[in-house]
Image 1 (tube, rainbow over the protein chains, first blue to last red):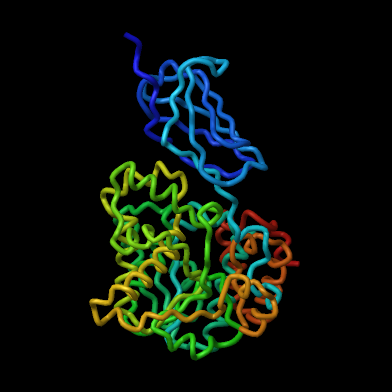
Image 2: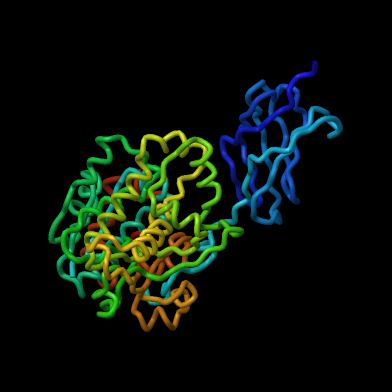
Length: 112
Length: 314
């Protein structure tokens, strides 16, 4: 009888902005065999920071500067080449835009 | 109408001082905000904590008619100071007479129009956001975290989220005459932040989405109680705005006509704006300016970041 497939419960930090690296942990069950992590869409890659524990994987999630905002699903694989059994998860990671208040000169700042 | 400011010092010291070009410019903004609004609204109140009063009242000598120290309770109860909006919400909830709350980066060159200040509730402008954008209102991660860890949200929030409500009120200014409603909204918002079941949720979200609780939830409350009128205090809930939209607020001509400045977002850290702010205060309020510099000289750790102190005297 094989071990149960990995399953994600959630992220310690579940979002990041384009052009950043988010150091976070994936929390779940049967995670000890995971070797690769894939995100849906483009511009998001994850690297394992240390060998996973059964209930947690510490990861660095790199978000490309041109990664489009929105939610991403996550897929785990026990093989380095992505082959083998994998389980999609309903847990979501979010790419959020920078504040849309940013990059502007405020409201009526010319009046000062 | 009473003009009200709030300053909870802990979040400023811990976090959002970084938004300002320097500590000096933060204090200069306080001077200009209070002095410009006091020309139109003489009943000036400050809600703060002991540390805030030492700076704004004792050191700067800003002309508040009344100083309320109830935000000291936030220290005593060890509230999470990443929730900087708690200071504003406690201040909204404490109001007993029609009022106008101003952020300290808002300057009123003219009085607000009467059709705004006469309203049951008013704010700077309405905002519309799109769920895919998530640059300001990160509703989906918030709701996911609440749901996953069994958090709590009030009926107004649940109702509005179920309808996919995507409005908010920009609260550079906030006030009105319907105090019962404003108190209800503010207390509910405080409850969202402080609810026992939500405490495990906040660390999982990374950042505290303060404007979600202040600005999005205010829209949720307004729409919920407009459509579910059971209590007389919730009648007359049409909000008035200084600007009809974000685009109008950011239009320089509109801002000129309104006589309104809000150093929203990155404007607080813009060198040209910081220089203009300094020139304006030095020219128009020289005594305040000197007190500000004297305070910073006595508190050298407060002079950074930004321009070095030796540049201040040129």
